[in-house]
Length: 355
Image 1 (spheres, rainbow, N blue to C red):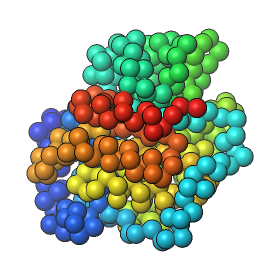
Image 2: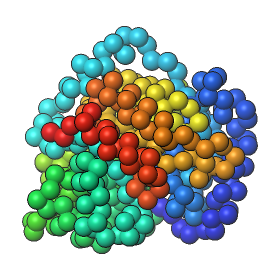
Image 3: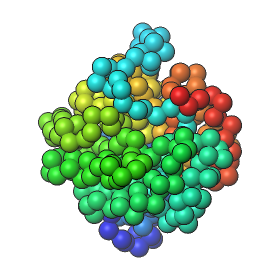
Image 4: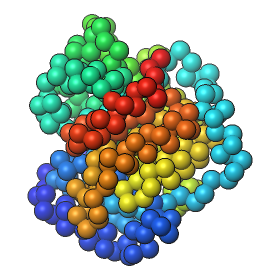
């Protein structure tokens, strides 16, 4: 995971990468899509930037991102089947808590309501959030979740707010990565409130992840063995653009996960396009699909792009997810979301009721 480098270097790298894409990759009207841009302005100091198979140089989940081509249209049969498949769960996930309602991702704890746990929970409840995804480690810096979990878990006691731990495994050592993720699930397990689920972020080789089917399988099977039986695996995956299909091991991930969380970031595209293609493609694996949307302005990562109109785009993402009957949605990320994002989340709680 990240080591500190000057913000200016990360910005310059992102700008050069976007320039290399050419006009076609950035032309939303020609079908160009967004790579999962899972970053915010506070993450511009993160250095790891690499090249995806389907487009520009981009950083991993907690790094600044840039755009890539959109996924090819989904076959009509798959689209028609989606609402039924969305409610179908495997036997493996029965009895495990899965998110419902709305959620928010937290990357930098200290920049999220100043790292004050009761303030975070109060704000979450005020807008109707039911899930908080908090970073607890990575292959780069190990397990870092003790402080945030130690503060946040007790603050959620006697509320309907659930905490999900997320981690970035690079899969150079899949068993070691699984053990680290399992530490988050074990934290405070026998002494009070504990994490409700885990959300490993399994990215592509472009982000430094050795995401072969074999390594992904080893990681997820080991993680399942180490986790308490009632803790679900909510695997976060890059959105299935046309170039990723056939290369990224979506089927392997799905086979060993309780739910799939595609990073459906539109960046310079229509939110409905990226969201619909992500959900419809992934539903073929018969696992709940709960998309993660872009709650921040992508220009914070790539200044050469126009500003995102989040006032319209976040509601469009939420409407599309509602139309597709998803059970839960979330947005990246707490520390970078402007007021319009929070307002959209507050209004959306009536669309995504918590079970």
